[in-house]
Image 1 (cartoon, helix red, strand yellow):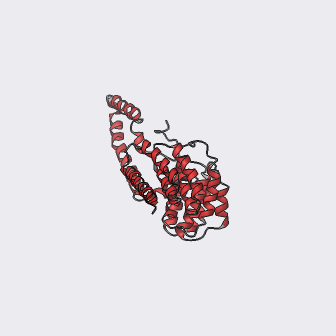
Image 2 (cartoon, rainbow, N blue to C red):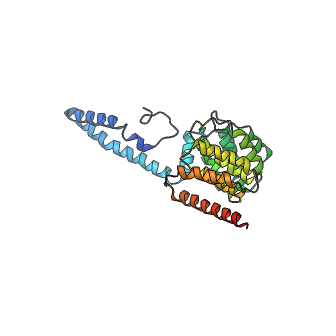
Image 3 (cartoon, one colour):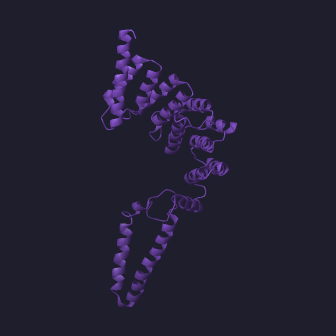
Length: 294
């Protein structure tokens, strides 16, 4: 019923309709067969069999026009679901890409007003928009992040990942990274355990990257250790922790983290294995230098 009826779902994938619709189309086909067997209704059934494909062809053509570009898809979705948070954030990205910061902020403001919106994700998105527009955000943008309820939903995680990666690349100079990192450092501890979506470890990892960029690497390490304990199969947080510990010259702690990573490494991601080996060689070099008194 959810996947194959007229329920006004915002998120859907048309291929999911194929299996559930089998019963509907089988029933229609078998019913048409029974009707054709009656001479009086044969013309009506034949006419229907001609008109239905024509109707479907028209609908398909309309879908092709809509799916020609991401912009058309978003605008069509906005006509059907004007209050959709997903559509509004997508339109915000569209406006940011055009250099229209005001248009982007208007859509984000509309999304933030909807019940159940990802408050932290939208607050970070606002900061991302100012970064891309190379315009300093107003003080209210920072207050919005500090007052937001943290969540590990995919939208929030992705917007935070984008922000932390941009800061790592030396971008977003118009943002007060220390203020953003401090707000996230205070808020992220309210996310219990692995989070409602199992993505809390990513929130901790990206918050750590921002803290490190703000010169707070020791506090960043606490978040990375938390992230590594929450998702032990993922090595990214531990690898970043080794890097920070080496930069802080905390060699014993770096060595301990490396031992844990070697135990957890399954060889699934070759770059992770190579990075572990590179860190080991770096530690061996430091130890050899210390032994020689260099």
